[in-house]
Structures are given as C-alpha cells and as structure tokens.
Image 1 (cartoon, rainbow, N blue to C red):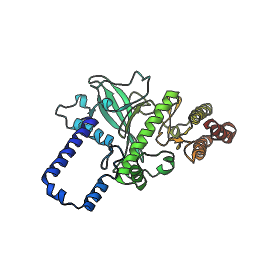
Image 2 (tube, rainbow, N blue to C red):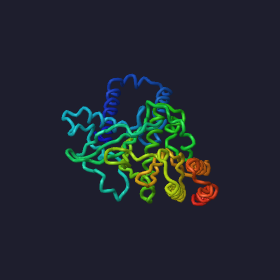
Image 3 (cartoon, rainbow, N blue to C red):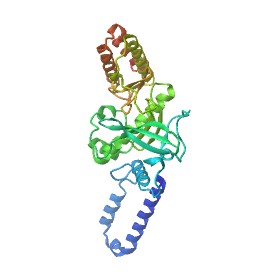
Image 4 (cartoon, rainbow, N blue to C red):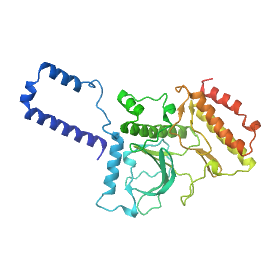
Length: 339
C-alpha cells in the first residue's frame, strides 16, 4: 500500500468514528456547558493553524510505510524468486542524481537479496545487498540502515545538528528530549542528510559512492569492492609505500578542499571513513556533514577533520613539511568563505 493510500484510509476511518460519536451521543453533546464546550474546542484547535501532520505515533510516516512493505514482501503468498528477501524498493524510494550510472537496476521486477553484514556501527549497520532481475547476476550494493526507535545511541548528534532545524516545534522537542519518536526522527534526519550530501557531492565530482536511493532510514549506495563481495579496505587498514602515502594525502586534501568550497566539512573525518578502492581514495559516512557557515562550530569541525587525518599520515611517516596542516586549514577556511 502506498503512503497516500494509507493516509486516505486513516482519514476515512477517523471521519467514520467522528460521525458515529455525533450520532450516538447527541444528548451528551448538548448537555455540555459553554465553558466545557469552549475548553474542548480549545484543546482540539490547539494546532489548527498547522497543516495535517505527516508523522504519527512512535515511527515517522515514511518509516511506517517502508516497514509495512517489507512485511508484505516477507509474507507474500508467492515465494520470491532466487531465494530473495524482498522485491526491489526502487518504486517507493527517493532516487539518486542524474546522470544515473548504467549499473543501477531500476526495473520494478527486480529482487533484493541480503548477503550479510559488511560493517556494524553505533548508529547504523551496512549490509551487502544484491539487486537484479530473476535469473540475472544482479548488482552488488551497500545497504546502510540507520537504527531508530529501539536504539538510544545517537550520542554525538547535538553539535552536528546545530544549524539544522525541524519546522515543527513538537518535533524539535521530541528530538531534544530523545523520546522514542524523537530518536526515530533523528535517525531519519541522519539518512536524509547523508543522502542529500552524497547526491550533491557526487554531482560535483567528489570522491564519494553513488547514492542509489533512500527509503525511510535505509540508504542503498554504490558498493566499493570486488565482484566476490570483498569490500574495499579502509585507509586505516592499508600500509602504503612512501610514494603511495603522499599520493593518498594529496587525494585527501583535494576532497577536503572541494567540500570546503561548498561550505561543508565532513565533521568526523578519519582514516576509518575513507576507503582505498583500486588506488582511489573515497569518502564515506557523511550523515554528520556540517554546514560550516550556519554551524557556530564550523571552523572547529574543519580543524578537527584536518587534525584527525594528518595525525594518521604523520603516524605512517609523512612529515609536517608535506602536510603543512596550518596552511591547509587556513586555505579551507578561506575556501569556505568564513575566514
């Protein structure tokens, strides 16, 4: 069932209940005093100046629809072909930027097969997924799934969320107080922010994986690795030779400069969220990307990215005369237009 269908059904049922109440209890309604009626009206009209909410209960509406579709796939009467776990979610998702790589599978008859966990983290897990038409080899993807309501691990978000604001004050309160619904909103906001950042940066030619789609709190991303499912190593796992080390530093600083020119900082850059794929450095894990102009701590986020990255390269033998971190930071601040 599509989201607008579920909302229409909800509205029809609510209208039916209201009409039944009006029919069954007319005397009680007429017996209310003017003060009681006024109080009742006041409570009901408290948020009448706001549009109809799109989020109800403990899950956001988008996440509720996504989970309902997964349940439908799991309990389908006809067994999914090729032992797949679900039908493709392409039709219900937000899609990545154009031009789209030719390896992206867009056919609605495709199926998704979960091949296991690639990485576990505090806020999200990354699974290896194969998407393809039945009987075809398919394409490997990285499925990043943010944890939401049942988890309480968004412990680092306060500083990153500066400069980001939900339009509804009730949603902001829920996020600030870390209610179950608020944590789900935060999870969805992380997913939305990362997908938007990846789409923007990929369009600019930045070294990031192509964002295939976002569906609720799940992102499907370009898989960086080998055809057998072996993922590309993180920078922290490689032991480059001196010439290769200098080349990787050059790639890293170019990525930092490109982000800064767009007014952005990675916000949590380190050797653990950079992949080395066939000699190419690729930036990953961008949910906390920081708008350094809007965020009061923008310069500090830039400085921390530089310190973290340079520290790893210094530890591998690359000298300060190569990294020139003070000069690099000054150039990034200038490129971002905040110096």
